[in-house]
Length: 112
Image (tube, rainbow, N blue to C red; front, side, top):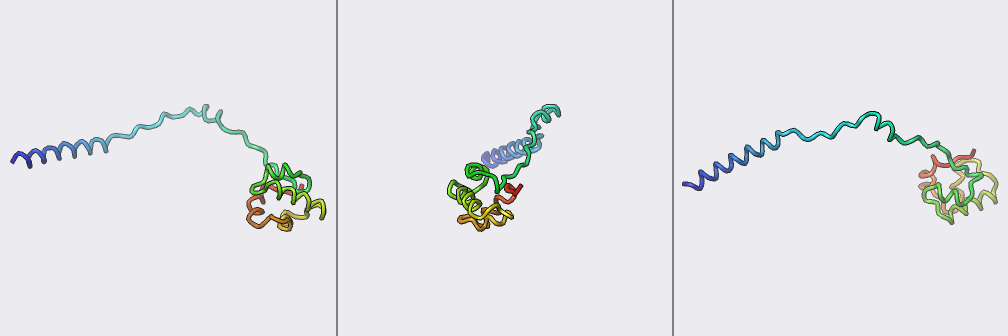
């Protein structure tokens, strides 16, 4: 007879402790002063595009995604053989440059 009574009592104790813990307010993070937030803000970088008609192979390799040394040199060689690029889409004519690479870099290149 003791066992069911003890079990019921323990259940009641643990259930009320569980409810108390669940109902306790969660700790809130300390508010950050507005001055500290504004001093941490990063300065805006100028949005400069890589000029396909003047950039050297090192710049193309460094600034463009998916462009290694071989593709960068192929872009420069194409430009030297065929003249300046008339449009960004003309990059598709360069061996090794496909639509996926062009789409990744479309906003990074220009013809200034």
